Amino acid sequence: MTPIEVYKTYLAFKNHFTKPNYDYFQYCGKSRASTESFNKRKDRYFFERMSRQKSDDEIRQYFLANFVECDDPSKLWIGEIIESGEKNYTNWLKRSQSLSYLFKTEAEVFLHKDSFDSLFEIKGSSHPDILKKYLQNAISIETFVIMDIILNFSKKFDKKLLDPVWESVSLRIKKYKSFLNIDKEKYTQTLKEIVL
Image 1: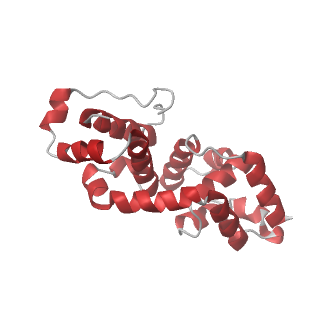
Image 2: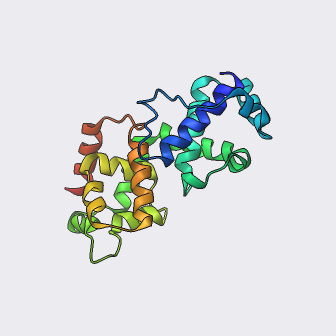
């Protein structure tokens, strides 16, 4: 990728994780940016360096990792990525490379046969326990998203939880789902083995 293509890739990921109507795959990772506007950026050296140091796939994974790792993708700016991007990328790679192990070990910690259904209960306006576990970093976003792929609980939460915390999490898991290519049957079987 050329430096401006790296910048456009960054914009595409930012749009994907912050705009409900933009889908990275639907638009093939395309975004609009002129060479003139790119050349005016003070941080363009970062995109130039990335274009020399990383392959095209690594660049896409790098931006994915950084948008997944941050608490609020709409507030993620390039300075934060410059500062902690490599650490975020390394953490994400570790989780991605051991995804089935991560899911199994995290699920074993909090899933129990007798309390499984209660994890998804919404009592009044309080958050369900599974969401609390995610917000407390007791489970990773990957485990949370895989659980939603298997059980599809986010649709119920979308109808019943009308607060900005859930809206932000809901958007993030919807956007991250399309990047997690998992064998749903395999993970469903793992879940059954733990719960039953």
